[in-house]
Length: 342
Image: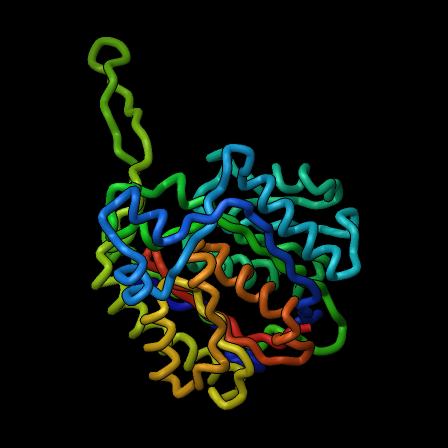
């Protein structure tokens, strides 16, 4: 397992701080309920809801793309931050399902007209948004960029085997975004920690399947395609309920805080059982745990920013609130960030 990337409180003197000033999410029009899914695969609303907490998920249409839904989320976040696309210096897109394998962040840059910004993708699956947020903070703290948009967007229906009820009941499509800004007084990213363990990669992946093609003489080349998502649900659950509380406790320690200081716990929306188990282990009351998976399912890198945006726009998350974020999943990878909103 790799050594963790951490930021103990007070360990570094940064020229600048980070503020979190806007959020947004895309509005996908098509929903697929558990009842409708039961017409596709042998399952039922009761079976899915009791095991996952999911009641429906959004499905991207033929007209949707990472460019379009990621761009919509970014534009909404920029507008809430009282900025324009021309103010944005950097766009980081966390996704596992780009429109283009060479990257979709540049497509989002063009979509929203952020002509001054540089843009690039990060692939870290369900941990991607937290990893992208931490990456963005380093550019801000060093003074290189002032206004950064972090987008989490995935169209997991592209990688779903709709004949496999173990996985197809879990996933949905969506996009969310936040705006982070440089500030000269204070730093609202209080701590973070990130981990990876590639020895467990086979527990959750969408691997590339190769096929040899004769090119000339004794030379062959490899072509193929990406497989649909495969998952060892039992191992992923065991991994999540052990590692997520641990990484959150370490991040709180680095921030000089305790679980009592958390206003909102926003976890990757993988499974309601995981959310409940993590909160119970940390002693965080259910009313502080953000959950919207009943409406969205597991949207991979998009799940944390979508949930955050819904709570911000509902007036639940307020300026100055302490948020504990944690993403976890394929890689396997996991991480956490403790921040003050606003």
